[in-house]
Length: 339
Ligand code: N2P
Image (tube, rainbow, N blue to C red; front, side, top):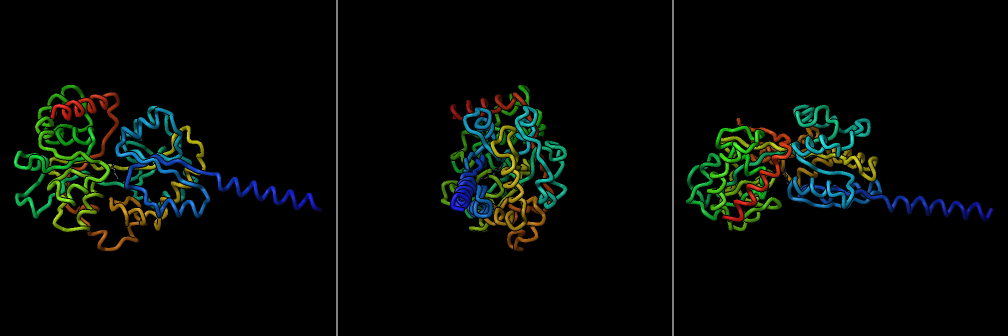
């Protein structure tokens, strides 16, 4: 009898140790996954989440491909999903383990970068746009051409993101942002060279900071950052550039060599719950593709013009540009070093 109870205690110990030891590593953008969401998941499942933060897609790719660490869930934008899928770096998702996928609006599913959502599920979408501190800037700003003007020298903050910057110049030229080749880059170069001289701050983590503290009066930022500024003070107006801009679809995916594919699915499905996805919107007010979560948002949240812009705008997603992405990076790095 004694050995039976001994065995039972041992089994219990093993089970609890096992539960306590389980963990996943998340490679995701900074200021994008609320601590509340992580805490809730850990409490409910006993699976610990390690959050490794990046501030651009290229860093995500580099970390993933270097193989130095293994990740269970990653958070690439649409064009990077396409790139990683082509390189066979993503696991095929098991939709039977993602019943909450039904909450995502059909306009965000089955997009050209990932037909059938074989590899990814939308997490948040948003736009890249211009923030104007209208107390400081009285002239109307409609697009990049108005913004990048010598009168605003060193009053501008922009995303520290080469692909984004090059796309702004291509939009000004009326060129396709996904047709990147030596010819289109040569045309973009002089425009970008002029812009670099005007820029004061490059920041992809928290570009709102230099607008909020008054270091800059204008910026090109992620829409969620603009939405936070607007919540803070409605003098910060969000403008979708008339020349056109990027609508990103930041998504969750599982690397092909993820240590715990099952727990990764669990985490993704958890984020897709309406009440959990609402928590994400509460803290990071991007455009929530989860339509069931959107129903839980307040009218004030839905009326935020940066989160849910009204009216017509020229928006497009990015596609994988293959090897040209290193030319894009080199162009911006060189211009910055000369600026
Ligand atoms: C969140 C950054 C949003 C990333 N901090 C846009 N792709």
